[in-house]
Structure formats: structure tokens, C-alpha cells
Length: 244
Image 1 (cartoon, rainbow, N blue to C red):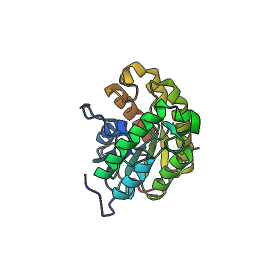
Image 2: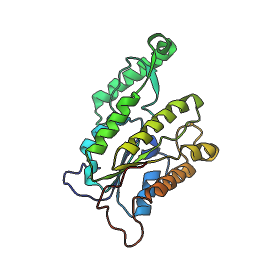
Image 3: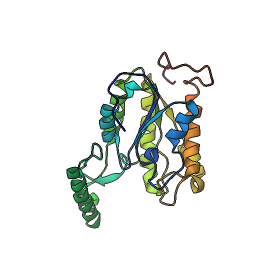
Image 4: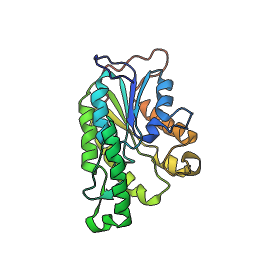
């Protein structure tokens, strides 16, 4: 993957976490691939396992969304994860040997923190607080006013205590899409939960082939309002109106 330097409106770019990237041993198309193929667009996939909207800012700098007609964003799984107050955070992108080493040390620290219940002592906070999460995405949206953004809701998790936070982040994302004129919201949370036995892997987090296709269908259905299809399709020439 190479960073784009010239300003061209071409194709589709996806930013997100593990369900955007896909697992290493998962060999079926992931949801951004399904969406891009259906639209006939080349895809640049910046999905990165364990990443948050802090990595989004780094990816958006290396692969500017303004160079693409369509941008897909899905973060929230790791952003909404609870950790102890004051826990260090080490970026996953751009990576380096030093960061890999520090992340190993941080993982040991967090394991030790769980053992001694530091969340109870110091308080629990989200990995990326909701205001920061929304601010990071808003910053990327406003960096590319001529690009159409799809803000994709985070799927539910088979660990039920995680879902209220995921839903809170999804609601914030929905409200952000309403406010921003070049974005809309695609939400497959409920259908994924209704079919959780078929849509989510046994680990409770990653999408199955059924889950990826269901999520892609939801994005395509929402996108049909803004994106013309068929042989006469032309690139967007104007920003869609805000949702009401």
C-alpha cells in the first residue's frame, strides 16, 4: 500500500479496525471489498486490527480521503473498550520496532492492572473517550468536503456488557452524520444481533462471511440514496444534503 500524493478523485477508501481489515485466516471478501466491487470502484483498504480513531488520523494523513470519491469509516470497537484511567496508549500505525516493544510492555501493565483491579481503584474510562472519538472523525470529514463518507456503525459483541458502550458510540456517530453535509450513517447493529449465531464468530467480535455480507448490504442500501448505480453512473458532482 502506497500513500497517495496527488489530488485525484478516484475510487473508494476504507478506514477501520479488525472487521474492516479482516482476519489473516479469513479468506472471503470483507465488507468494504463487497461494497467497492458492487459499485465498480477500486478499493484502498486501510483497515487495521486493534486500531482506533487515533490511528484514523494517521491513516488520513498518509492516504487523504480527499483523493477518493467515497470513504468508508468504521471505528468504535476498540475506542469504546474500557481500560483504567491514565492507561498509556501506543499507536498501531505508523508502526515501528520501538512501538511494538512498548505495546508489549503496556499489555503486561494492563494484565497486571486487571489482576489488581486498577479499574476499581482509579476508575474505568474508554480507550478513546466519546468526545475525542467523534472529534477525530469530524476532523477527517471536514478535511475532504467533496468526498462522500459512509459512517458505519460498530457491530454488536457477544460479550453483552460491551454493547451499551458500543451503542452509545454508534448513536454519537449517527448524530455526527446528521450534522455533517458530506456524510451519512449506515447501521447494521440490530440485524447483526438478530442473526448473531450466523453473523459473529465464536470469539464474539469478528464478523463471519454472513456478517460481512449483511453489513455490506446495509451500506449499499443506505448508499443507494446518494450514489447512482448502473452503466450510466457518473462520479458525484455535489455533496448530498444533510439527513433530517
